[in-house]
Image 1: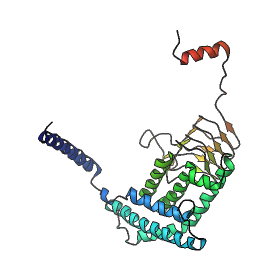
Image 2: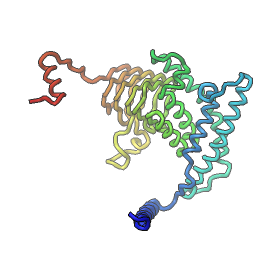
Image 3: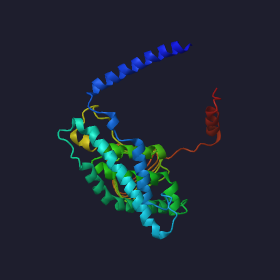
Image 4: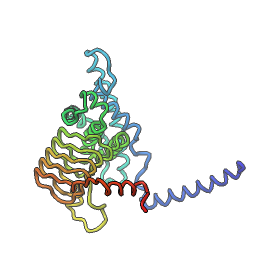
Length: 315
């Protein structure tokens, strides 16, 4: 293909893409300008600075003398909060065209000040999560190992930050933070989910926790647990309650094993145990154990026959 033919082919593609953009913008009403959307890279830098301020030695790289540690923390927090204010301003600008009233110019700064009051409590919550992991996992050798190496702790750390910002009125920034955690850990927690103290997500890959889920204290989840909704919004007859409370309530001291799927606004009672690969659509009383039927162990001719079937040797 000659260079001129290359240009002609590309011109046609560019025109088709312009048509696709025009159709999308017409359907969307043209209300939002993506240039005002908060930056994923800037939000990631905010989280990095904030995490360094929360855990200067283990996650912030501080290795200086103790008398300089507070200065390091202050420097990283200043950088984090400055980034947060700029991204908050972007988020408000993004929503402005559909807002009834104009956002006050000082609103982003006010949210930053309110978030400052959340920083120390976030540290306390994550410390409790680390303690829960140390108690819950006999393979753990130290709290430092858990904080640095355990994906469940990383996901909870990011969620504690995102949840605070979500509650303060920055849902886009909060969702970006939850996606950063998902990309790093494979754990998808909506920032609106309410999670109590001393929670341990063991292994964690594939865990999904929906927006209106409520999780109590000392809860332990294993990999591929889903706390989801029963059906997408707009499908079937969904009540107001189901729109606002779509996901499960998990009370204190519950253990949910790998692969369990719990859907809808059901309540898992205090101290219950949910076995692996269980599918649940109803409430579980406190202290109950929910399990699949015990697997059959085959021997002799039955085992030989299944071995051959798995190898594709069925006559």
